[in-house]
Image (cartoon, rainbow, N blue to C red; front, side):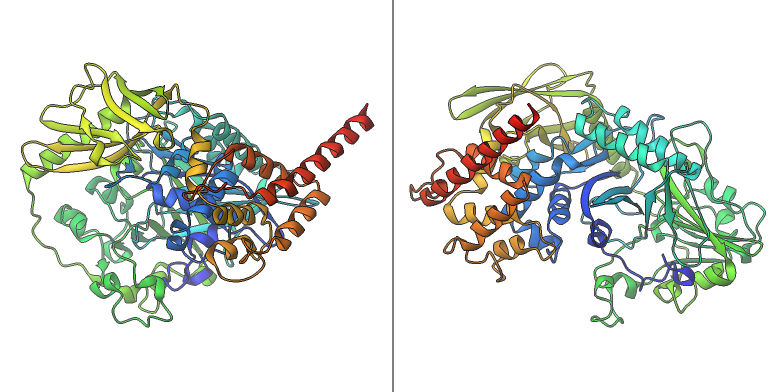
Length: 613
């Protein structure tokens, strides 16, 4: 957000910008909350944090070695808390690397029965001889590949000596997250990350965007008191979802010319005439804004793919001050009135002469050029379809609220899986199928009897076993269906499962050497990434020239770098793996070289031990 252009779509920040470490710092850990999530986006995040040289989401997804190293390096440093039952379904077999997200993603529920809806990122960065640096990002988007029009606020700060009481709502949210779990307990690593941020937030003061003088935070859904946007003489409201009672409360005391609203056309059609009359102007996104037509492609490439509205903003004026509130909450009863939803908000304030008025923010020179006036249309309601959607949704909620347990039984090279559920009460009128997520829907079995007993999921290769399940729910009457991914507790998982996944990705010598490049790469230039992508530079010809590899290993040894320990662990996990042509994945000449390093590392440890003795 930037002073009087806070709502100008030209001021864009990419998702990767939020994850990028400040100059001179390195990534330490991160915590995120989201309502919905898709596995592809979740897989990209650890690699994006590890390899800032990546140019696009698709580039990362198409590079399994980078995904693997990103997960190996950062999965235990990231804690993602997601609404139970809101992980998007996978229409075909999922990447087996999703198994490495098992202890990264924790499914939670709102304590008051609403939606767990906050969307924040907290990131911690470290540097030599400097205090840690924190970044707080409040988003309107979820951790998905959704391309809606969104708004984000990113603030950086450094923990100091004095306590910052303005951060108390954030501290309470972060502290409560590990105890909001649904079915499966929060992994120890995620709980530790939450504790770290709760501690650092107590003393962090944020650097504010130009023109703003104060930042305040609020969280709904955890306590009895429910926060509402500040009241002022004018109101500018952006909300994709709206309800009559919430809008009536927000406009109380305002005359129509003092209030304006931007929402979705289908949502506006549900409002009463009295509610609509409370606003002097009501807008929706213009069709040209939805398609990107009429804009210069070179200047506005990210606007070309933006479709739909997902941003939430409240702008008010009080005396000579403008307050802009951003966050996860819509102008709805659940978000602002009853407090059933867990929501998070940040209100930034500053002099109106610097920030701009409500009209300035919505002016034709800024956001206004992408809008058109809403023209009321009759609301079309298909009651049978709505009833079917509610039945399917009730089935999803029942599955996500129950305790699902997968039991593994190993038989040579395969693992037999059975699924059971506790406290599961499925609604009538649904057909339900379930399958191990990596195996895909072709391995689906009927789950209608899950509430009464055990369901056999079949047998899988160990590398394809994970706690994630795919479900398809179909309403018998209308045919409405939904795909969803849900995590289960997994019992009896063989200890070498992760090693099997690693062997399936590092399947030949070339892959091994490229993976070593990623493992050893600690440079901002992303030389390891260049090797894997074949872009030239230090490691591109690693499979034919060991000199750069040797130099990096010597450098790591001189610095007593943990990366050499990672190489040792990699070689042990790969074991005697052989590629498709029968050759050893780890070249014999490299093993000879590595044994020299291993002996030197052992001697170094012995000397340190003798010194302490």
